[in-house]
Amino acid sequence: MKILLTSTSFQDTPGNHHDLLNNNNWEVEYLRGPLKEAEIIDVIGKYDGLICGDDDITEEVLLAGKNGKLKAISKYGIGLDKIDLVAANIFNIPIANTPGVNHVAVSEHAFMMLLAFYKNFIKEVKIVKSKKWTRLIGHEIWRKKIAVIGLGRIGKEMAKRCTSFGMDVWGYDLDIDEQFIIDNKISLIHSIDELDNTFDILSLHLPLTKSTKCIINEKIIHRLKQNVLIINTARADLVEKDALLSHLGQKKEMGYYSDVLWEEPINENEQIVSLDNAVITPHIASRTYQSVERQGSAAVNNLRVLLG
Image 1 (cartoon, rainbow, N blue to C red):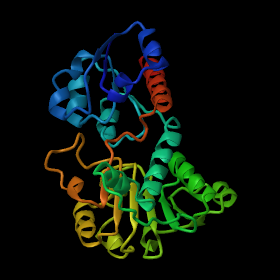
Image 2: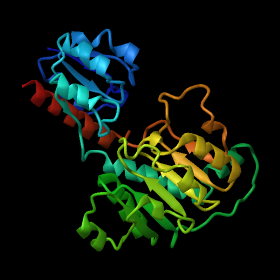
Image 3: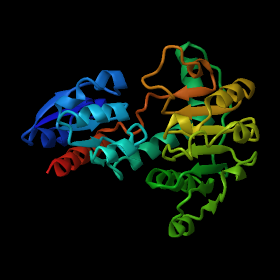
């Protein structure tokens, strides 16, 4: 069988996931994603299986695969928003993802961003590199009020870290784990409209769906604090871009720390990176040796099951 692997995290990170991949009787070929529709549509039909990252697996791509050899898709990672799941079901192409493998890595990245903002870490490093000694004044995070938006595996890990640092943790999710809420003394937000200017931080951990797209919109951002911090390690489209850019320009003490962009890889005309109060990392929150090995191994195992 011929397999196409597009995840660059899988490719770039040494570990047992490579041994697991190579121990199958597969002919494996590699492209470096995330691939646009035009980059994958003409080749997808050559392969029996695909291990993908955040490639554009559209209805047209799936149709091309169906008309060729494609039998199954294994997503390296959790988010399935780049795959047309309706079309995959119609064309009878099974999809699997890898939940439960990156929650520690991503929550650590989000918490690092929280500390970096309040301790002026990035600003101070830049200052010293310029041979200056300007000593800014930071803030403690103890008693800061944070809304963890999405209490799946990653959101729960973020909430636990915030609780252990003495923060006032609130959580929002449509499917609440009541025991987790009780055990970790988390207060509940029952509607996204409850977000107001009493919150210091929003940390986003939701999947991107039709109902969550732009869930943090103009109405929400407008009533947040002047110095609010929004952390996004999930999907960029959870936030309404134009509203965010406008408020970042007006509220100079506001922060937007994100590991995701609306277009990836970054477009050379991307405006947000020019703003001093926006800090963007290149979708690396889950890119640790440990997490990649877990995700990669799970993706290989899933494909092996799907292909029988």
